[in-house]
Amino acid sequence: MKQKKKLGEMLVESGVISQEELQRALDEQKTKLKRLGDILLELGYVSSDAIIQALAEQISVEPINLKDTYIDAEVARLIPKELAKRHTAIPVYRKDNTLYVAMADPRNISAIDDLRIVTEMNIRPMLASEADIEQAIELYYTRQISERAIEDLKRDWQSDPVDVVLDETDIENAPAVRLAKSIIMQAIGMHASDIHLEPFEKQVNVRFRIDGSLVEVMTIPENLYPAVLTRFKVISGINIAEKRIPQDGRIEMAVGGKDYDFRVSTLPTVFGEKVVIRILDRTSFSFTRETLGFSPHNTELMNKILTGTNGIILVTGPTGSGKTTTLYALLRELNTPEVNIVTIEDPVEYMLDGINQVQVNVKAGLTFATGLRSILRQDPDIVMIGEIRDEETAQIAVRASITGHLVLSTLHTNDAPSSVARLIDMNVERFLVAEALSGIIAQRLVRRLCPDCKERYGASPAEAQLLGVPEGTPLYRKVGCPKCNGTGYSGRLAVHEVMHINRRLRDAIQAGASTEVLRDIALENGMTRLFDSCRETVLAGHTTVSEMVKTVYARD
Image (cartoon, rainbow, N blue to C red):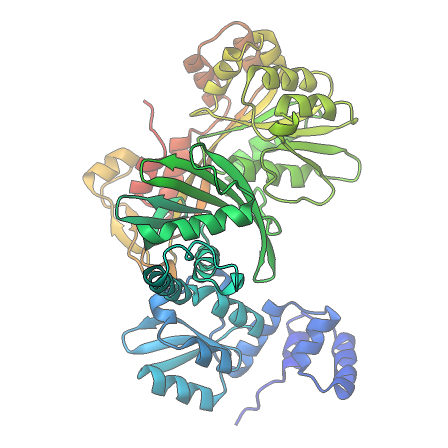
């Protein structure tokens, strides 16, 4: 019988660690009496992912990354939380009578037997890190907490409707507090970008925005909503007595070892105050041009745009199209020790090392325009403006760009060429627009097909005509599986329209050319339309025709 290789040997053979590093870890193991993997992690020689991959290969089980896996609440409830914590295990998904379970120790036969008895299902163990499982347990059992909190609120309301709003005797264990916290935890666990609490006549709908679409996750009886609303107002610093006007607040909270920033907005409606909470993970920014989906052709155009030391680079698109994320990715690329980068944002969504970031504070008189004036006195090389919203900001930005600064900002337009007309509408002189602009990137986000369940089929006559391909061309459609919460989609990707402003376009802008003429010149210069970028994404099997039709508009 072939003897299995030891973990250390496997890591050395794969080039993850050196023989010297392995020996130092083994020497330390003799005194600390810890597992070799834990010691290697402590010494900083390996990542937890590398350990998991090697261990999975060693014991012949499938590894799983819980951070990228959605766990349905119904699946999580198959194993009680107490049992999950005892065995450091969490159900991931089920298939027929088989339950796939992430475990820190898949070789624990006793734990597998316990899980089999409780679930009355076959158990298929998978390997995940202990830390990831513990975090997942806290995140994915929150729906049960929400349901219990609602039941407690109902009971408290029946006994004493006055005291249900806020229990001062044990604030952290009050049902309204638990429910508010569980809503936040559940949203993070489901990778939501926004939480919507929407009051209606008989109930309050709680919806999460996931991959750009709203998903209803629970309802709260309308008589219990004031308690939850009060809790959100208290922790976000909003006036609980004011119900007649919109208000804004902010929550800072650590969840699962990460620091989150929650932007809270209230809006009076006929049935009460609606609340929308934007979730910002300020420590997780890792996007690059490659991960954002820039094609090789668009990357080449971007390289031309980014070579300049002055001018304006605009990212355009509707709300929620990922404009700010693209700006951050470009800033990270431009951030070197030789340059001074200053941003003015509302809000600051991610913290970037080495970049001076300024938060707009309208109440204190710090607007985009006033902040920009001050920034220009700070000897910047590169300036990022969160959004050009008004005439004053536009004019200052343009003049800054022609005086030796590289300016990056966003604008709300439908495509790249129409951004020129938008700046002129803001009373920026045409010759200044022509001189200042370096490049414009129009962007949209489309939902990415789940790789685990997408289904291949042949293009219908209508689809073939739309895409300009033969009938029966291989395409993919959504199906739905436990890993994508039955939606058929997992994550989003960006499609781009990159317009490099060269001399020919500058002359056309200064001569007063229409948007249509500018578009034709840009296409001749190599610009790819949003529709065509999305078309390539569809043909590559990354998204669906329906997503393309919904997201981009095809012009003749």
